[in-house]
Image 1 (cartoon, rainbow, N blue to C red):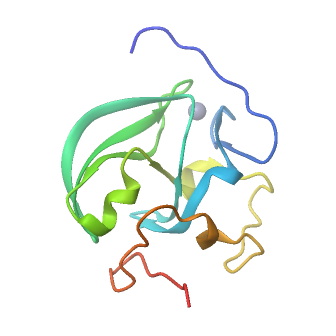
Image 2: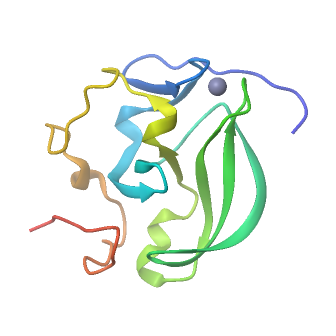
Length: 142
Ligand SMILES: [Zn+2]
């Protein structure tokens, strides 16, 4: 991993709760319907300013995935994980994307996130629609 450099984002951003390093754009949220052991987690198309830990196979509610934890490049806090591969065909859309734990990040509007806000999360869902019966990843698409 070697040298560190920090990218500054402009706009509606999520940042490390501890050191305020920018991590991702709100526009890059693919889904807000993820859950982790600390509660809500968001799937992002892209995150920046993170280092990636060793890959490991992890069984999730939606099946077996090869994932790696991701850490804030500035303070080293674990902020989420990234998907290398998904075994389940219906979960392939997650490959190359990353989840940030809501608990670990500050949002563009600080802490006032409310479920069912104006953000239209499913419009951005790319490629294969997720299996709406998958537990832990319920899809509210009509
Ligand atoms: Zn940090």
